[in-house]
Amino acid sequence: MAAVTPLEYAIKLEQDGLAFYTQAAADTTNPLGKKMFEGLAADETRHERILRQVAADMQVTLDDKLPKDRIVTLFATLGEELRSQLDAGAGDTDVIDNALVMERAAEAHFRSCAADASDDLKALYERLALEESQHVDILENTKTYLNDTGHWFCWDEGSVLDGG
Image 1 (cartoon, one colour):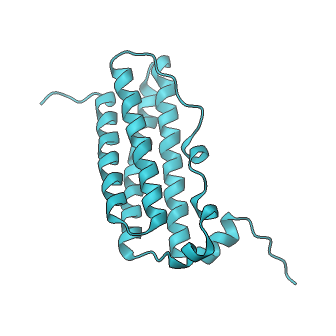
Image 2 (tube, rainbow, N blue to C red):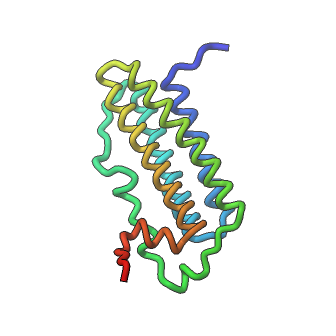
């Protein structure tokens, strides 16, 4: 079996991520989880497209917007009634845990590729590592929201607590 190049491995990571997030979006009944997984699947599709363009020696222009910029905070847009209907089953948080493992591995791979890449590819790999890091942040934020909504609102929405 021929050795796989870092670029080929990166494309495979994105394909695996797309398959995982597409299935997760189809399986979850939680509206927040469904939207989050659909957004992450769209990012994986875009990453694969960019990597394939690089593999074909095409010019690649990266979007200025990062995942956190594009994903409007779903939590803030949820109505109170919908918020009360959200209940994280064990399956939802298990899927998020698996996604976190994948995203951290992808981030580590892209950081390693960046360290070894020529200048023209270094920026691409660094950008992909940053996007995977933001996927980790999004997943961790969602897990906190699902597991401890009250504290999530306190910390992530920046509540002011006083001693009075």
